[in-house]
Image (cartoon, rainbow, N blue to C red; front, side, top):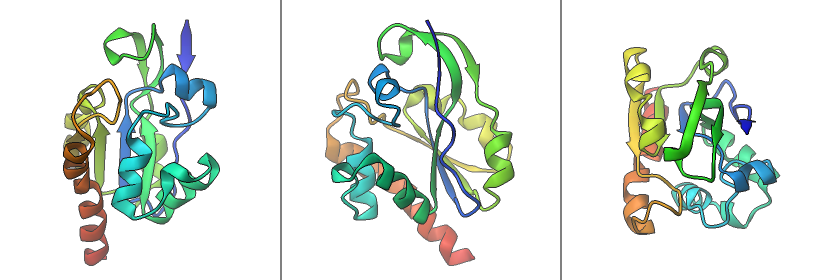
Length: 166
């Protein structure tokens, strides 16, 4: 069955964009980015931003990201996928990133949540953006939370560095 992803969470002040691959079935059912309760995304971002994101209602999480200059989207607009594994993605259609780059004029760094999304890093690097491929926040990627968090600190380092140059 062909599924469509979510719209971008972005505004003109976003300096960092985090791109996943495509929402999991649990996320699609909840209509929320990283909606699977075992996904580490909201815990990782909460630790980075010193905000209790995981405990917040979803509607309150997104404004916190934007307030901190961080946008959110996926590399794929639609696809077919049995289950939640990226390896099962078939017949994918990419998102049109011009939608984001037209709005997010302050965008400097694009981070990729996992290797599947990370395949797009060269496209963004060629367009002049800093890129960072992160270990997946998915529960299927068994790296310990602390090890993931160490790598994910590159997100906020980019935000701070960008603020210092403005």
